[in-house]
Length: 235
Picture 1 (spheres, rainbow, N blue to C red):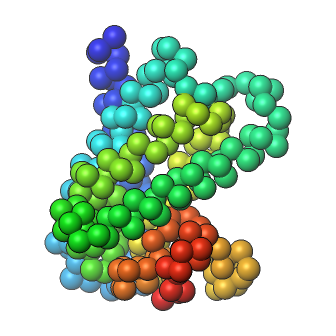
Picture 2: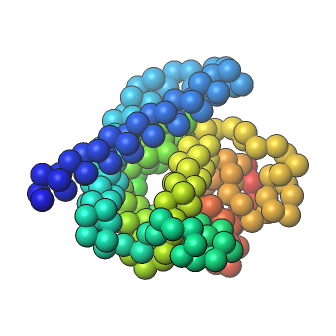
C-alpha cells in the first residue's frame, strides 16, 4: 500500500511539474513573440522562478497524489464518474463552487501573507519576481505553496465533482495563474473593461498588486477585493 501511495504521489508531482513547464513555457514563448524584449535581462530571475516552482510542484503533487490514490483504491472522496449521478446543472455549477471557494481561501491567506512576518519569511519569495514573468505563477516559498496545495484536495472530500469538471477547474487555475503574471494583458480590452471583466482578475488587475503590494489580493474574482475595499483597479 505504501508503495502504491508513493507511486501516486510521485506521478502527481510529475504531472504538476509538467503542467507548469508546459503552460509557463507556452505563455513565455507567446510573450517573446508578442512583447519581444519584455523579459530581457531576467534570465537569473527566471531560473529562480523555475526552481521555486518545481519545488512547489512537489508540495502540490504529494497531497494530490495521496488523495488520488484514496479515491481510486478506497473511494475516499466525493468525486463521481457517472454523469447521471447528479443533474446536469449541478455538474456545471460544481466548478464555480470550487473556483469561488479557492478564491476565498486565496484572498484571505494572501492578505495574511502580506503581514510583516509571513511576508518576510515566505511571501517575499514570490514578490522577488520584479517584474513577474510567465514562469512566476508557482514561484512560492514552501510555506506559501503548502497553503495553496491543500485547497483542491480538501474540496474533493466535501463537494461532489466529475473528473472532467475537476480537470476544467485545474485548467482555469493553471491558465489564470500563468497569464496573470505575464506582465502584459493577453485578453482583449473589450473583455477586460466589460461588466464581466469588472469582476474577473486578469494581468491588468494582478500586475497592480505586484506594483503596489497592499491591494488586489484576489485570484479569480474581484468580489472580496471590492467587498473589503482592497480593489485598486487595473494597471
